[in-house]
Image (cartoon, rainbow, N blue to C red; front, side, top):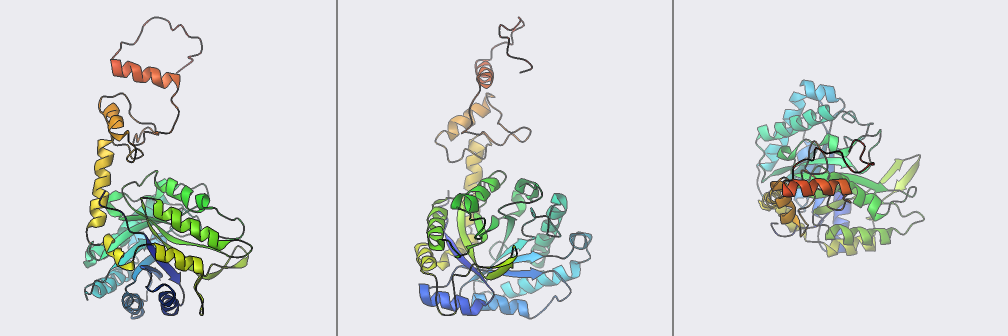
Length: 377
């Protein structure tokens, strides 16, 4: 692929200027990313949005802006178009001031949660995501200035599936997810990160993954050990671009959960060590200077040479699997999409019989089968 991905640290904080400066003092540099939350409503255009962006830009930090609505029907019917277009125009005017101004835009995050107005409605979510993206594109934003993120909750509710809420490769630059670890249940690396990454890999293979929001409480647990594992294993994953830490004290699940690692007078040592071990903030340019696109194109080429299977790109057998598909021996393991090979799955005797017949172009026998256990196979 186009080199290695950088591994970027971000901070989501209510007191951004104070916490970012505190972190810079402890680490020697600012994080690459910081999270903002905007709602498409009647107060656009406004003056506070550019001020928020300037506060980050002055520190060399790129904003990750989650955009929400109070009503998905209002968004998709066009009732919010004036406010949405004003938001997009405000951002584009700010970007066009130059000076390496950049932004990540996250339309309608966590659609796989039923409690969101845009949740539990795959078609409505896709339409809304594309409507928000189109507003920014039409306002004049370019890939050198803005990238778009489809972001999910690490865990769904209501039986929703991540893959049902994917707007498509053509309109997604990055894929993200949010997952917080509270005292109960305590989530290991695999549950907090590994499982969501695997679920995202079921439908999006050519986009880097950004952990949009994560954090752990310290109550009765070894958060430093949790953080050490998170930093080391996320940086080892060749699709993970980084994580934004949720530096907030949040009331949820009937109690106050304190995820903070940056305090008014101190910074958690494990967070400092982890941030120092990851790449510098300047590497956020990787997202905007063409390297992201070349990385994605390389992965698409790999998928094509692997018979179109998105789950074998890293395998030493990718070319062989591609040949099996090209001569018709295998067509994949997940009809009707047939974009998976399932390289770690077992092969039954029946499947092997089919492979051999196709490979050797053997005729179908017309004589009664000698085996009594075939049934309708």
